[in-house]
Length: 115
Length: 110
Image 1 (cartoon, rainbow over the protein chains, first blue to last red):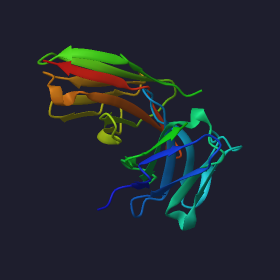
Image 2 (image 1 turned 135 degrees about the vertical axis):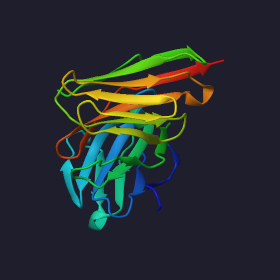
Image 3 (image 1 turned 90 degrees about the horizontal axis):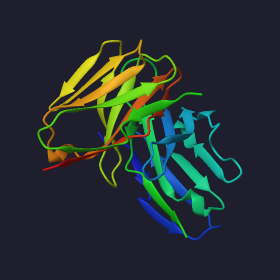
Image 4 (image 1 turned 45 degrees about the vertical axis):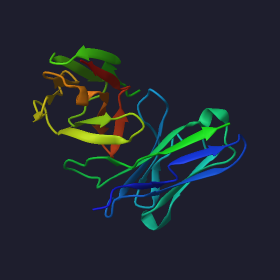
């Protein structure tokens, strides 16, 4: 079974440029998450989707960040324009949701460097 | 505000020694997860603890959950170099919400 796939793995851009990250979750996983991880810290939620609906985007800086989940499967996270402080790893994760073990499975992450 | 605190943040231990990492959380939950992260890699699931008193063991690692105390522990027995990594606990809240601790960076030295 394929895991959570993210691309690109690495991205270097100049400040004020746009950038986009893509995520393909595990097949059948209805819940998709985008987390931000700064160096030496734990993941922090940016947005959570249940199918195609964004149910928690309270921590997403909406002035520059946007996200979408097409047809409840793949998702894209965009930053426009990027700032120096956006340098971090952007992690996508998915889960089945609901009761039971409901393990969160992470992708490899997209490391962004803003110069 | 939901808080998940881990201690210690940094742990340097000798091979063969035992130690415990603690995870405290501020709001009632009956489900907790432990993850491992190697440098430059993503998070890998280690344990899922689904009820009060749950205990899971894998090799030299053992995790437990006390929901009344809002505390989980990750115990390391006879540490080996391969266990060097950062360990995160994550608390689950209703509605598929996961909140992560600050992480414990473990270095096992010969």
